[in-house]
Image (tube, rainbow, N blue to C red):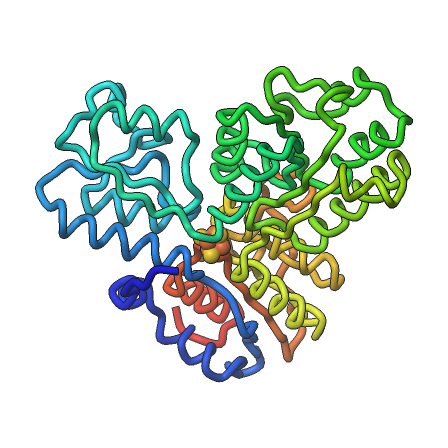
Length: 385
Ligand code: SF4
């Protein structure tokens, strides 16, 4: 994989408190112990994408620099780029009609999670300069799906509908004339398994899947003869494995073990950083801290899944976006089951000593994590406001 210099990125987003904790693993502040996992926060792909943006700002100084929607799933980082003059083609801060005005002078950054083929073709047609920061780990499932399409397999993607990476993968498959089905959980994969086992008909399967979960023209009776599984790079690894195993069992029932060679493929496309952060978070959660705070954007897939690791270990885990989410009485967080953002009262235990574990998603800067830790220590009365 290509080399890049992330020094400037790391310096911009550094936190001395987090650096001390990274070094020590845990630190005691009066009656409160703060614990961090051995792996958390900015991943290789995010470092690389942000370093490429800085390089583009220097190399194309004076030219309009655009992001399609966001560079990574963290509001603070995207806001920082906006303050530096980077403009947006989509989303909350989009310039109306910008796509139509793009021309040879404009520079457009493709984010780390890639972009749909239609967007890339549109950019090419407008003659803009493209800076492609797509993470090489994201290209891995792309390559695998192209192989599936070529060999006549329909791709089952363990991913989230609407997530840019999965949208890009779906568009690639459709563009190549293949078919896909997106399932975001084991539960959503079950109707598919039941169809393969002959226990659900095609109409029943269509009704059970969310809108837009299948490619246009997808015909379950015709297109599920051969099934290849991949996952969005940032999903919960154990759930991806469970989905692959469940579909394999269903096809074994339909085609026999000997038939699987013809009809089934399963390829793990979870990225290394996601896997490392999940493993490290699990190790910390299994130490049964009193509280587990997971810091990252609410639209960050890998952060959402880190919060689910706490569930596995039976530890109260809160997915929060930043220090503004914490107050003595209440915590503002994303509910892991419903996905809603709301407040929970009485979240902060009054007992002492208190052991609080933190982790942070791959798109969460150290600076933001450091502010959250400092806020928690203030609320516990261990450091001054
Ligand atoms: S989380 Fe993984 S796939 Fe996503 S940018 Fe980071 S290294 Fe790449």
